[in-house]
Length: 465
Ligand code: AMP
Ligand code: ZN
Image (cartoon, rainbow, N blue to C red; front, side, top):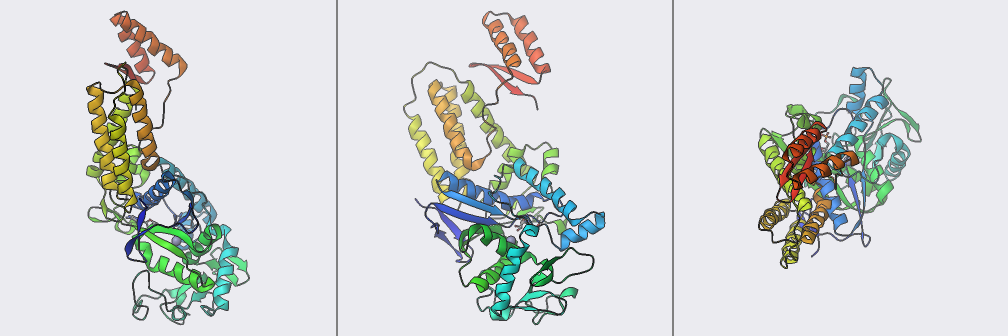
């Protein structure tokens, strides 16, 4: 089987054929670091992460780039309000963003370029556009992309450039434009804003040019997959295509991957609507980070996904079931022979999991395959049909699929030696039917944060939350 992905440009699901055999290059529009990101932003990033993880699981070498927009109108405004520098504000929220990424189990991208560190690359691209007649300079030193010079404009968003942006409010600082549809590549200097001295004059970059310059600096042109939220199709991605293709004459991107909205209260989660929740707020309500991740990836990435107590509870109980199974498998002891049908069960699960994800990352059947397996393994543990080696095989199998899902607990939490000693002492007490000592040791362990449970397979311990 090959992997198929929906490509917004084609408007259809297509086979993913790497531009360079075995290697897939992916760019994701990253955060604008002017405040804490909300979990809606992270849905799009979690979908991109799932794509990267699955391609790696499938044996591809993936290079993943995600930019950090650390200069922009919103950052400048916010820094001014707070009376701190743009750099201070941006680095504060960049750190918070990275910590949230780790919390949700989103792999760190291979490169996270900052816009302010790539001004020369942006300037070079703008110079090419000026030389090719695709851009012009206005009186205040701003530079605009000339839409009328690029007949292909509108292909991604399926809009007719003739009819677009008519009546759109023209920003006060953009009155010098030849045509209301044109967009800023470079903003001329303003007294109280950061600016750079460059070959195209003093000023700062527009948002769209940042992504064109940073993606191709690290991935070349064309590269395989560009990801982002569905709201970025227009104008952001349309503008990225126009700039990159007009400057170089080459295709920009082979496949456009767009994630649907996370909704809360029936509407897109958005700062402007006020229906937002940050990662920290969700965790403060007692939801585990793994349950939050599962809630964000549990539906097909292109469909709208409702976020709220119900979806978080469903995800929490699914994560608990997985944890309980892994705990039971780790504790499983028996001298039975191997279960001859286990390889078939695992093989069928893997086939269903891969068939679903090969089909445009179809998560619902992929998760159903995993949780059907959880149920079946629990049944076999209860029926004592597995061997101890089978239990180890099942754990290894689940951990292998979890390279994609990233919802299982961190592997092998080993007890500190002195606590392990207490646990061993308690096991010996129980073997000798010394229940008083066993109870006393249970209390001693509980005081040290270790909860002990007695099962058919002996003692099982977990750390108190
Ligand atoms: P913004 O902060 O609005 O620029 O968004 C940053 C990223 O998050 C973009 O890729 C957006 O498309 C994405 N995004 C914003 N809101 C949502 C949402 N409610 N659901 C999914 N993705 C979103
Ligand atoms: Zn972008």
